[in-house]
Amino acid sequence: MNDVICVGCRKSLPETDFAVDKMRSTGRRYKCRSCSADEFKRWQATPGYATRLKKQLVKRHELRDEDPKMRWAQYTKNAATRRAKKKGFVCNITVEWLYANAPDNCVLLDIPLVYSNVASYSNSPALDRKDNEIGYLQDNCWVISMKANRIKTNATPEEIELLAKNLKRALAV
Image (cartoon, rainbow, N blue to C red; front, side, top):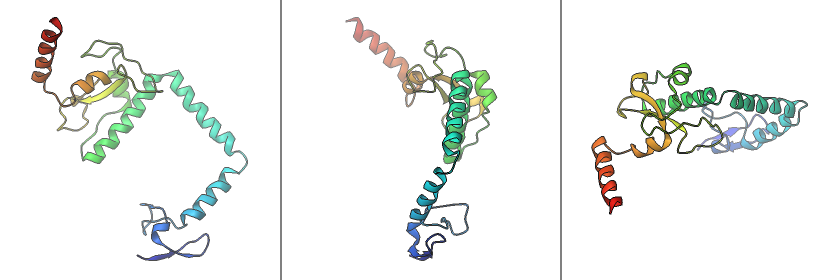
C-alpha cells in the first residue's frame, strides 16, 4: 500500500485515508478524509449556506407539490438509466415519454395510481420491462402499479393463471 501526502495537512498517510475519486488520475482525492471533513464544515459556516440550502429544498418541494407526476417521471427516468448502465442495457426512455405514457389507472389491476413522491405504496406507479432480457426501450416498457409489478416479478402468465384458478377454488370452500 502506498503512502500519499495530503495537500491539506501535509502528512504522509496510507491511500485508504483518501476518499475514492474516479475523476482524478490517482483514483483518490487530494485531501485526506479528515481535511475534507474540516473543509466541508468551513464551507457550511460560510454566509448564505443555509439560505442556499433552504432555497433548494423549497424548490424541490414546490416541484413535488406542483406536478407529482412530472417529478415521478424525472426520478424514474434517472433510476432506469442507472439500472440500465449497471446491467449493460440500452435505455431510450425519456422524461417526456414517461409523463405521456403514465396512466391514471394500472392497466393490469385497474386500480388508481397515486403519483406521490413521499413514499412507495401498492398503488404507486412503477416502470416495468415486459421482457427482462431486453433493456429499457420504449417498446419494452410500460407503467403499472407496484402491486402488479410485484405479482409478475418472477411468474409467467401461465403460473399467474394457475394461481388465480387455485385461489378461487380454495376460497370457494
